[in-house]
Length: 397
Ligand SMILES: [Zn+2]
Image (cartoon, rainbow, N blue to C red; front, top):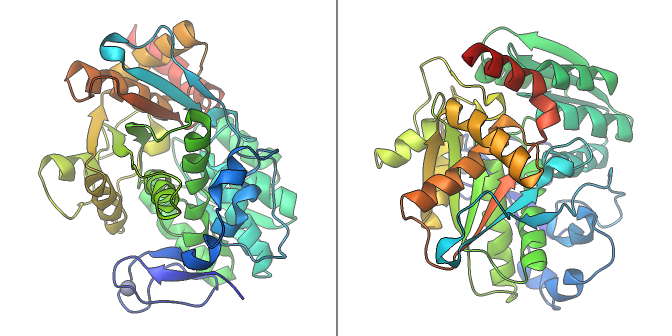
């Protein structure tokens, strides 16, 4: 008996466990819902807090995998949580922690959703996967496809860093460069997945199974801190990481493991910030970013063209958490990337640096409560876009 099923996030229609991406009734994106009564019939989280082993598979009752299905894993998860010593003004007893998703097997948080999605692909008996990617999803997809023995085709926009392109090819994936921006690659991947009956791993809300892997960040944070933080700051393109983390904390509350939820801050780059714009304008619906995406933070440069409802979904989660959406200028990303490396020994991808720059901005503008505990999610390693940062630095001299 399975304890989970896909449900439309917008209209509530329920579906069988199958390779499905959108609601057949309203075209909305899907969410996986669980029989929580059954999962939580015994104290669920407590023994896991001190369990040996760090892999995300230890949370499998809250992941959309069948009971006897072998997890496709490279040992993802169990990433360090470190307290900043020299970067952040610790006046007001505020503390800033970094969750180093940059040390996952392919150096980005995407290993969590891809491990779950690749397990689902095997579960469904599929032998090919496809995705659109700004880079990190593609690298993770290629690695986990290699691990699972599946064929993998990846569609990336022009401007994808060479480090990521090269890694995808070395893992044996077939790489296609699509003229235009991420949303163009998204469309081509969607067409190719349908034509080839391949599992689409595109990392928006496209694949509901993948999104679930992001919840494991929340479980780990609660165990590592011994409490629920006040704020979690997340770099966002479409935003499934932010939504997944919040969902993880909601599940912990439902299970009686905690009675508190964090406030969620979603961060974009100023040159491509459709969700932030809607938040500032107090709109309910996010509109696509029709201007050319102009930022060095390529990993989160998602204009949401043809799928703005993904942004609307993320924005609604931010609002539900009484959170905030904010944007960071490229110059600040260059500055904070260097500060983070020099003062804390953490080399982060430019997209990830948004979460650190945002913490400083929130402190300076008085948004953080006294004694607040803040987590910035360092989503990817600086080695993944080294050339972009170097070129930008040279160009700005
Ligand atoms: Zn629907």
